[in-house]
Amino acid sequence: MRHFDYIVIGSGIAGLTFALKVAARGRVALVTKKNRAESNTNYAQGGIAAVSQPNDSFAMHIEDTLRAGAGLCNEVVVRAVVEQAPERIQELIALGMEFTREDTVSPDGERGYALGREGGHSARRVFHAKDATGREVERALLAAVDRQPNIEVFEHRFAVDLITTRKLRRAGENRCLGAYVYDAQSGAVETFVAPVTALATGGCGKVYLYTTNPDVATGDGVAMAYRAGAPVSNMEFVQFHPTCLYHPQAKSYLVSEAVRGEGGVLKTVDGREFMNGAHPMQSLAPRDIVARAIDREMKRSGADHVLLDITHKPAPFIISRFPNIYETCLGFGIDITKQPIPVVPAAHYQCGGVVAGLDGRTEIPGLLALGEVACTGLHGANRLASNSLLEALVCAHHAAEVVGDATAMEAGEIPQWHSGDATDPDEMVVVSHNWDEIRRCMWDYVGIVRTDKRLLRARSRIEGLREEIAQYYWDFKVTSDLLELRNIATVAEMIINCALQRPESRGLHFNLDHLDLDPAWAQRQTVLRREP
Image 1 (cartoon, rainbow, N blue to C red):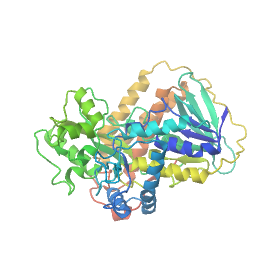
Image 2: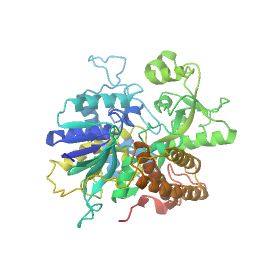
Image 3: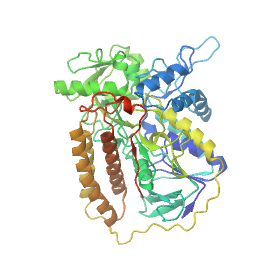
Image 4: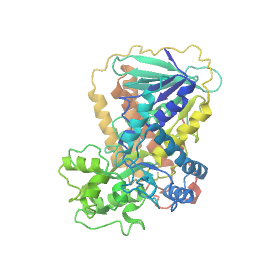
């Protein structure tokens, strides 16, 4: 049994920021599924939105966020996040984060930051590190973690389930005491105990067949919190990034929205621009609108993809602004300075999640939810580009202020993990088959465009698979693959059930049987709760 003051599950921007801010006040366990740099953050290309120029304002950033969120954002949360963005950016810079600067030098000898513009933004306000912002964020934060002796990093550890007083059948309120954690290298399940456990596990892109997310994004935090009794909200709002590279050998490679921000134009395979009549912002429209427009064009023409064309820009500019995208596409035989990029939408971001405040606090004392795993009300029905890393920074900051010094907790006797009569799994084909079936079912029936019939069909399929997986979970010893399968099945069912609750089309939830906005559902959340 391992005792700490804080347990942080996940090593993206939210988890690392929170760990660094509380490390001066207690011992921190940083638990991560793979190596410590493997997270959704690490793959983020675009950047972090923050107002910094005279021609921009907090009011404009707030309005852009509310507009993208399709009437479902919590305006108090939006205002707080936007207004605190500049200060959080400066903290990152102080930690060693290197944002891209302008080529030109000002009269006072300074080079300003080269701000980008992305879909849905009315001004240039995106701080970025060329087209690999997430990688630079991880580098800076992990370097800071290495300098902090109070943080102990546990790599290749998979959180199985949260430990709660309810689970231990104790009287009184349901409180989080820690987590059972599977060591993928030894095969043992360890017991981590702390007064504060922070979920910072990211999203659930791997629930879908095609996604921009890394393999670790299997919705683990949402599934664990739900099983522990925390309410989960708005899971029907899964954002599909409009531009994922379409190539047989390219696995989930995101083509940043910044390409459109710098003038990239969406075209059909025969070269026709199709966003002109879809939205006043054309190719720079919010992601839900662009993804649906692409989906519509692909279905209309029968094409497997559309094209993103930035060849009208000077080649040196393209190579300098998008060095990683340029090199990656070139590796697949596509010279983006001369050829348009074949792209398709892919599952990208989970706008719903564990119900949490701006400070990360959930309904369960001792349990925080930070970053993509949480539903704070910032994103509403559709996230504005480059607001996600920002949300993680702001909420981690508030969470660290709220928890203060880790208070002593009387955990009592906590039983060690017991496998009982479970044996080593003998047919892993069951896991791989169910994994593929869930992801294809979700892609076919619960994707960009939905119908009631498709959703009911998907629910029936997933319910059957969940029962089979549950039986397999109890019969055999846990493995990383089995734990991920269990979680994606749980999260898939949540997405479907939330989608069936909402009798309208709003933001990322587009249902052909309910095409109009329903005024009764403005500011109304879908909520799921597992009863004890």
